[in-house]
Amino acid sequence: VLNEWVWPNVFCCGIYDQHVGYLRNWLLDRMEWMDGAMKTLNAGTYNSKQYFKTEVRPNPSVDRLEFRYYVRYTDKVEIGIYDTAGRLIETLTPQPAVNGENIYSWPHSLGPGLYSYGVRVNGQRESGGVFAVQHP
Image (cartoon, rainbow, N blue to C red):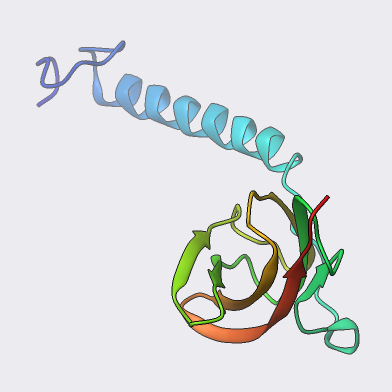
């Protein structure tokens, strides 16, 4: 397919060496860009001695809860909020967690009472607990 335009591309036509040179330079530029973008990634650090089950604070709460949890990898975390009858009220889906400690702040408008929560990490139940909501 040399010297024939087959897809929308900036570079078209020429001898084999020109195509190889173009693709080589494109790949090098792309890798350089990716290396620069990866510097902004915070992967966190996992330390098994620092692992803890999910904590919720403040407890009791008025209008905001903070879930503090520790995961091993970059994981998908879901937090289910349940009423006293065990009915699911809301499912919270924080950004994918990075290995190490993570904090998710949830502003809520729950009525006063007791509620439970269940934390799932990559679909597997990790922990759960109870929290109270009081009048302001």
